[in-house]
Length: 214
Image 1: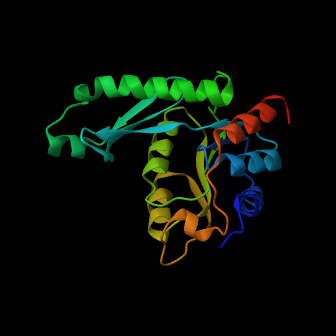
Image 2: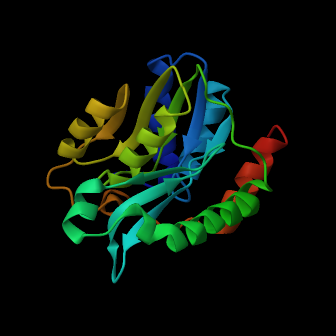
């Protein structure tokens, strides 16, 4: 069990640094991944950016993901075609929802990053960071979308995740660094003594400091 995100960040950064990623760029999943991402970026002397992912929920069942939209130089839209087939829906049925989600992502990028353009990951080791993974659905979408931006390699770095989720991600990312795979796994927050929600204001402050060379 980790004391808090800072302790997890220090341990994770040590493990990633020891793996010697070439020409790294760190991409944190907000909001929980940002306090870890900034520690890792500073440790590696790498740029820090955000990986903004929004789930496209099924009508009337928003918790069920029909797909996801991922921020980038051109936002990537990915659908779960098996769910669409079973439901009888098509991608066109989500046009209005996608428009709303793109606006939400743009709003978040403006709020968190003052509209700064995404960092170019082409030819670099892109390291996706979060404070933990449960099912892995969001991280898998992030890996898939990031692959389209042409990085040399995609790494996933997290303090804690279920072993079966790590196994799935190892087939999709080029490397997965996960410090703990507890059994049984209940929820990410159960493996931290302190796991408060990260406020928007903290994300804005961290990304502003990074932009100013801090």
